[in-house]
Image (cartoon, rainbow, N blue to C red):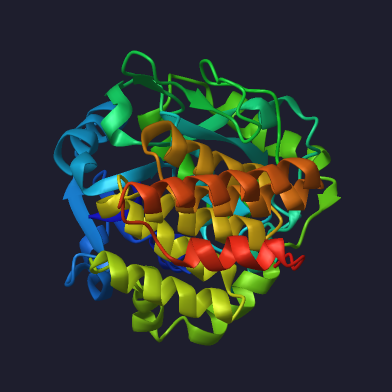
Length: 404
């Protein structure tokens, strides 16, 4: 099973498709399902280096307006293979503002049906002809965040919570009790949501050069409601005066892609690293190694995959709590401990809770935890109930006045 995949539908996107694959592999996307809407050069040929091992699956989707049917087909046939699936276009790039890997972000939203991302529209940078090189390298002028287009959203969903796709590509219908939220955990309705981009946004390279845009018009007409060519071009000319903000935050990624673009296996390995199922203790051992190296992003990535198989293990949530504590995410750490104690009476969870209270500065409540553990371990001994003897060391150390 995969933690995160991407579903997209494309037509004649040969030039930028591999860049899009490689970029999303860098942020942790583990598998791609791409529907080919009658591309002149078949996508399975364009991406033949990625399809042999299942990293990319290509499915034919002929005819006009195939998006709804393709998305529903993907949910029906591949949804069970993923915890999360992003439904985006190949001119859209998921941008993580605070995380290296998308796993560590999505872990914070697993109680919801989906996470929506706001568009950030990028313009042509004044290019008539398409320049040599990558799209991320050249198209760095964007619209202001206050532009109306930035309220448009796309979705990353948990297929197990999706009832069905909709005629629009922007949002989904969820089962009872589940819904999508934005990064601030505000419920999202319809195709728009108030702009928020402190954690995640979706860079939309709709226009690119005038040459690119002109080639795209026939595809646009097949996938959108009828519009005159004049109105289509007016949108392109409008971007010239709207894309006034220079945002070259993606250049660092383009440099890496340029350096290694021909070594395609590097990107597959980056995306699928740690993607196999391990025994629970093996996940914890690997996670501990990464934590010791202070690579907390990699540790959380491992925890995301661990949760695919061992989400009902209390120690899984306690391990996450310690990683969150190490990164200063106190509330996320508390939520992990709260989850454990809501479902199990686990004495070890109170040690994690102690450290959370100390991090909050609530030393009186923290001391109360130690006194409680002292009492509980005494009762366990009297009743011959087994427990982790490391709790004794923790209590004794605190009694001696050493907080650790």
